[in-house]
Image (tube, rainbow, N blue to C red):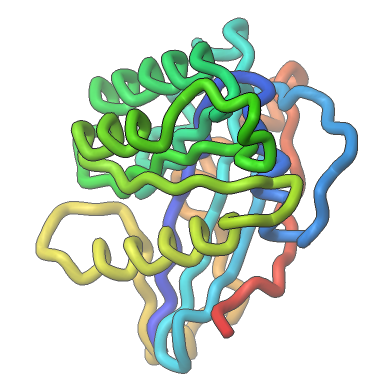
Length: 226
């Protein structure tokens, strides 16, 4: 048995549906009303790849408001993957998302899985960003492109399942990465409930010292491949 623990940061403009997409996958619900994320919230999701490999996603859902942008680097430090979310009905959110890509490239040196995600495909008549344009941009930055609707649950599961598979692939490559990989013998010496990554532990301490940043308790999930 191998357990891979990876840190995932979710970035994007406010109101694009970052939190709703995460909650849709983890809790299989769509929140009718959500308040803007303040700072960041933390979610924990465990995915069974097969009988021999399990992936734990430690998901940091960041605030999209400009006033919180200065603190975002503390959340994507040592991240193994990033979901860059935009609203297909808003060109502004797509352009803003490109700014987050530049931030990542400036501040993250080690290999990272990049997914560009176009949300709100349940509103095709309001689309402002074409699938072709989004795919071309994603290819230019070495990212995979996916579209989804957090409201209707269309395409959401595929995103997180593909992300887990990409982290498995990254763990097997001969490159420097901060993925936590445990085997059977190590698990025998540890609790079956693996703790957050070292980076996550550092950030939880920081969050507890700053009341201006919201911290969402880890959400247990029963998500897995069929």
